[in-house]
Image (cartoon, rainbow, N blue to C red; front, side, top):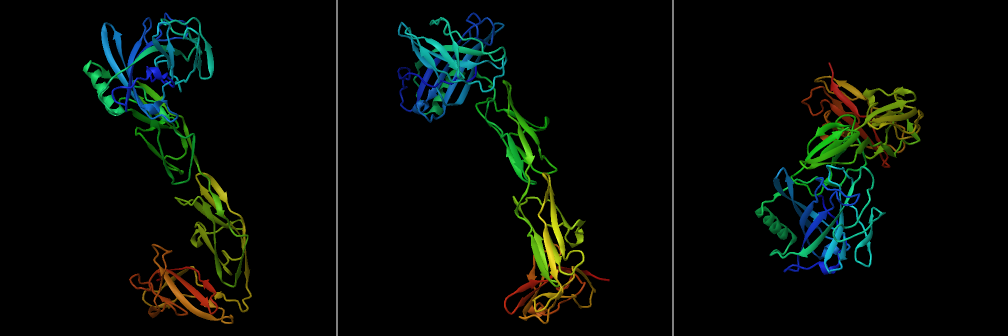
Length: 494
């Protein structure tokens, strides 16, 4: 038998043990035999199965927020003249669901229900609360299971209620029983459980395997962005011995651990349908399916509708994705219908456009971002370039994207020329350098090394402080306007 849920019981039967902290109710539960009316079942045909047990609880069991109690059930299996004594323990028993019936002779009888053994029907969610109404004689006239009322015939203390079959595959059984208070020396549920278990072991009982029951299932759906890891797990109720796990992805076995980590992306575990089977020697419970899908990106910040450049000033086009990428998706920038080459940032998260540069400069731009969820296309950004400098604070000649420096001869990085007719005029210049291994980690070049000069000379010698790397010039006007040059990748020339 699996656990019996009992919701209400008259106070007269809840007799406290010697200690107020713990109640122990000893019960005999009789499952109706095949000689009983239609709708009742037993594991072994032709027998009447009886199960004894202990219900160990405290006062919270009958409250609106019951704490966990313990239900120990024990029985004898007889087969081929061999008697096997088995006990099972449910350590998360939370509701006492049953009706106390006072017999004509003053005796007490409890009516409850259990579900079919797994050998007959694998019932999902088989614990069914019920209510019963009583006749004047004190026995139920009807029982309600799952909001369905089953009319019963003659009820007596010997045969109990008569319950019809639900359907050919979902058998239900009705049990009846009696209960008495049991005294223990323990003062907690845990120690009372240990004491009663010790009694059973001394009497020759061994703990039987129980079918695992998944009490908290997998989520039905799970959306993961590329690189996002998520641990899948279920909560398993009372199971003995410790269960084994078998995870499946798209019906293919993938792991035998209690948890499974899935990672979003085009590779790895990725999208699919997952489930887990939890087993002991008594049987298996199967989780629901979790469908893992790619999480599509959206734009927190899209491209600006327009960007205006003067002369050879530059601007950076970029978007902000939601959520922020864990693993960068792939990027492809377009100017009109032409893909921007990778060597000038066409496959980067950002794109620098430079006034007067043929490959970038004036035009309409967009970026296409591809992840495992598909391709996201940005809005269009129209970049305009005003070639007439006038008095605008601007680069009339910008620095190049790349420059090959002679190995030993210091040579100035070309460009970096600011409009000499600008008003206001140049207030300061500052050169910066970043290593090629980390091209965004810029540090200011000291003034003593030429870091605040109008031009900066570099060499191709990697050991030199002015050797290969990524260089940038920041120019500030007398009114605080700042313009930044193109990042120039300096390499060793011939």
